[in-house]
Length: 358
Image (cartoon, rainbow, N blue to C red; front, side, top):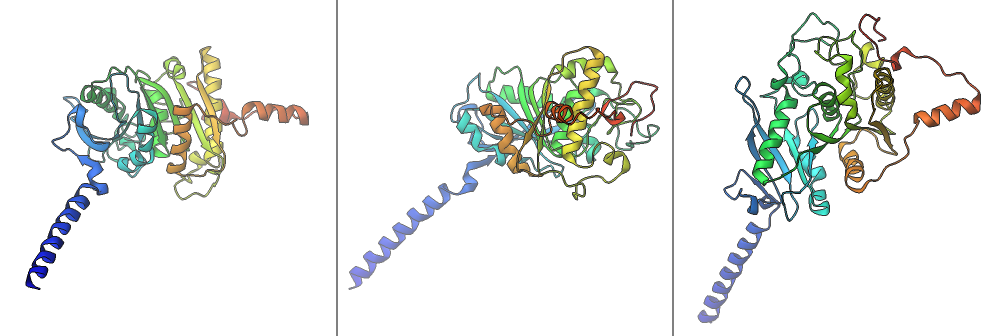
């Protein structure tokens, strides 16, 4: 009997040890190796993060890059930069996009624009283009920062570090952002057009920088150093203004209720439509190509997760939906109704010296 007890005790101990080894090697945590010693190009985990130097001598920046990688990374692997929201939750947005890395053979990277390096919305949503004491309606406040101290320039340097880390030959990257991240994307293309962006998607932005030189950031371009001619290379970028058809609540808790914000449109759908029209008119005035487009995703409101799927389908599968309330549809409606098109100062943009349309 004693012998049987001893044998059973030994067997239980062995089985417990095996179970312990299995649970330790199969947890979800094991898939997220952060700054581990395994960070060599051939042994990167599927999900993880690492820190790169993304600043310059005047403004040092250490930026964490959260990534999801395909099974094989080679020199030709495409890169998609996924910009987080105002909470600086880059890891969450990496997770929204993570499954697409293996599915489509792309490197998903969510850069974390930290509060420490780029505090407040002036540091992130407006790219650290101006100092934090700036004001959206009073151009006498704040001052302009050197462009190379912007968070736009920091992202470009992070891209260089990423290329080195993964031995990539990529000359460009795609970029996607939702909400605050969308504000970052549109302003990066407008203020820093030398960025190596191939295709950009700005989804459900709450405010836009219009081509208006009577208002300072974040609503206009006064005192930004950007002149009308400087927008030509911005319009050459392929920018998609992506709108969820249900993101049409004028009282949404994250929408500014200032008069200047409401003047851009009563809700995010209308703001995006007005922004597109104003910039298209500006491009026509400049007699330059205009590669921006409007895409509406049906049945989705202000959801970073759901708009991530729409963004991935557009960038990785080429799926599009006919824009809701597109300019062509609106013109056809007016033609059918025999209505004259109403002039709206909000949709035109402005040149120096004009009164503000807001």
